[in-house]
Image (cartoon, rainbow, N blue to C red; front, side, top):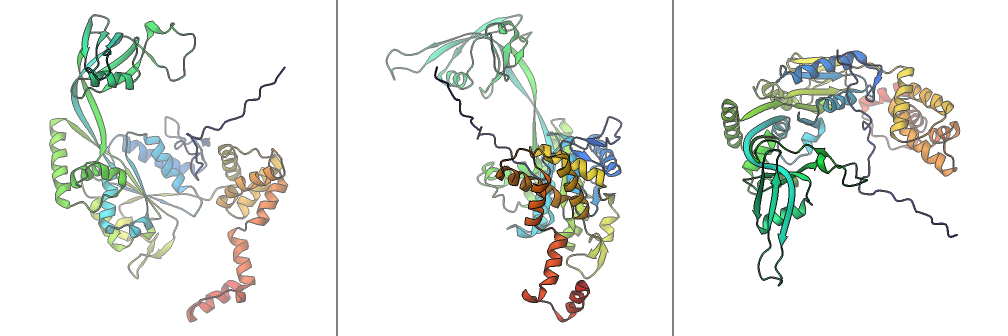
Length: 464
């Protein structure tokens, strides 16, 4: 008997990228905003997570627009992870714009324009409109095709029903095409927008649930609509103020959103849009949703950007600003003054400051467990203990980087579980910051050193 072998195929249409924070699902808080020890990819930092949870609740209640929060802590203590957790907890409805401080200096537009665009991306507008919709269950579709090709266009009839009535509609060529595109068949529950002719498939009727023995997981069953076929429905569209700005300012309109070539937007355009949105708010047609703008490495901004932020936060339509930095007392960029976190005192006074603390050995172990699971790497208990020790002595980031490298080393020796020898091999292949610095100091004379006269003392101090 011939044995059939089925080759394993990889689904290349859905390649999942594993990022530094792809394991974060939320802030890991319970209903009373108390942080769980390990939850939603978050470990430790209980006080910082609780503070972020309080901010989150205020955002949801719409009570904190125009405020700013600073996440301050040493490198590798989970500042960006907390910001990502906030973004995931807010959901898709609340706009969340992310920006690195250094990005502003590499754009073709001015710094203040780039900041203004980032602010507008973080402010959402929910626009409400009423539309006439035909909603019902498809009883029958009849399509009459002409006998001779090209003699006449296709025509047809569509029978729709609700629990109370049934109606037959005549179909034109465009509607037949739209039905074919959506793969509509008898038993489907559909909605047709009368103004645009757009067809939306809502699901299959419960009365047809026993027609097939097997169905795909995407098949959704819905009740047959009741009442009349024609209904007035309130539709809600969510857009950001920046999207409205781009559509109204560029000659190519909304296509600029896809190309990214938005350019500088004139202040007059923004004023007109703000006036229009204010009118819609008064009429009850629109609702403002203040989102979150997260600026990482905020110490990279200069004094001009900081004064712009001071002014922008006073605007009534400002989003919630969350900034993060790992600097201590350092020089404010563009000045000779020193300040905590490299932020001017007047802006620091406006910020609610959340501090993060270094992870304990136990927390580092839990984070490494989560990362092993995320990167689909099986590791022995001894190897995990060794990796935790490396994380404590060097840095958490270095230990996380070794996971995939050790997994590849394990593959090379045709093993399935990462052992201590794999960790040991990659530890000696890739240096951490401390060992690299030690090496530089050892062989300093063989490198090209560009030290100024004033820096010679610092170099000698490092050597000693």
